[in-house]
Length: 78
Image (cartoon, rainbow, N blue to C red; front, side, top):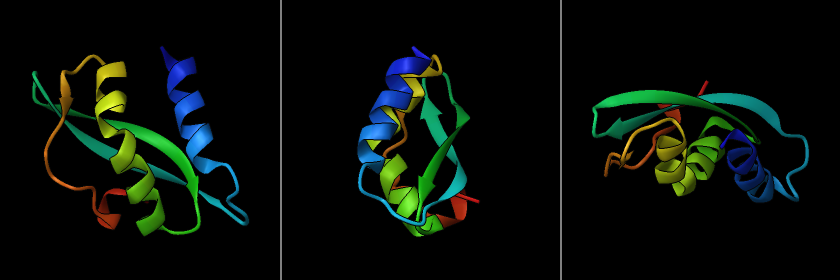
């Protein structure tokens, strides 16, 4: 399961230059909870946008049903 997650994140990162690592907290549903994912991005805002696009898959890979309907914010990525 982790291989497919990293493949998805890797594909979204293609072409990024001078990226840094960010750890982002993703809120999930059924059961309610959260998980973390590390991505490379140019800023915390870019990291949040990258993770937001894959948030349902990230939650499913962590054993949840889906991500919450809220859009990821930069404050969720450090």
